[in-house]
Amino acid sequence: MEKTIAVGCDHGGFSLKVDIISHLKSKGYTVIDCGTDSEKSVDYPVFADKVCKAVTNGEAVLGILVCGTGIGMSIAANKHAGIRAACCENTFSARMTRAHNDANVLCLGARVIGIGLALDMVDLFLDTPFMGERHTARVEMLNALDYKKDN
Image (cartoon, rainbow, N blue to C red):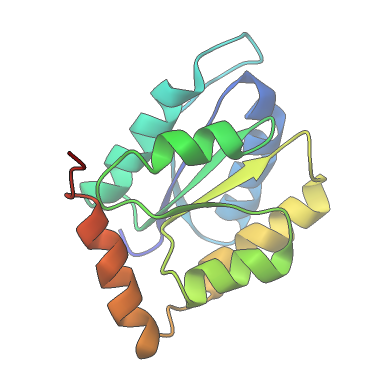
């Protein structure tokens, strides 16, 4: 499980998802492919749900979601308790969201970034450890928001 990554996409992210899975496997990761399996139009929340469940139930250590912009997947993923998903468009954000926010799902926009940048961001996201220290209390605050209900 330590090197197991759940990956999912909608139709807009299918091609990039295929490239990401190939890249992950070449680096020795085990991949749980949560779909979709074509460019046929589908609803992104379905695939965000599958990836997030794999992460929260311990099947995967981290998740990667791809859609056209990364935004829809990020919104859907962050509806799940225990998920800290970040939509990133640059390497600095991909690294810092792991280091400072202990993000566990990376969301990418296939229509926003190219494959080279995407793979660099995937590598940084997976290779960057959470820094802990002063950031731990902040992540605990984020986790507490999962269960807070506004009246």
